[in-house]
Image (tube, rainbow, N blue to C red):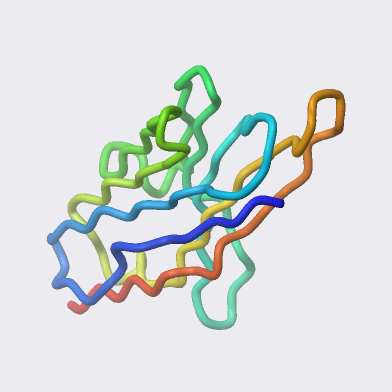
Length: 121
C-alpha cells in the first residue's frame, strides 16, 4: 500500500507564499501521476496541478503563473510552490498519487489526509 503525508500548510496573508510537500511511502512498484487537489468549504474538490513521472506539469487556469508543481522521483515526493496567494486559494489541499503496488498490477488512486491553507485578506 501507499501512504501519502502532506506538510507545509498554514496561515498566510494575501500576496504571500507557501510550499506544500507530499511524501509517498510504503510498498509499491511505481508511481505515475502525482496531483494536488483542493476543497474549499461548501465546494467540490478540484484539481489544482498535476505532474507526470517524466516531469510534465499541468495547472488549473486559476493558479497558472502563481503555482509551480515539481517532484523528486528519488524521494517519491511532490511539491507545490504557491506564490501570490489569494483569499480564494483558502482550502484543504490534498495530495493524490496514481500508483501500482506490483509489476503488472493496475494503477489506483491514493490520497493524503490533507493540509489546511488559509489566506487572509
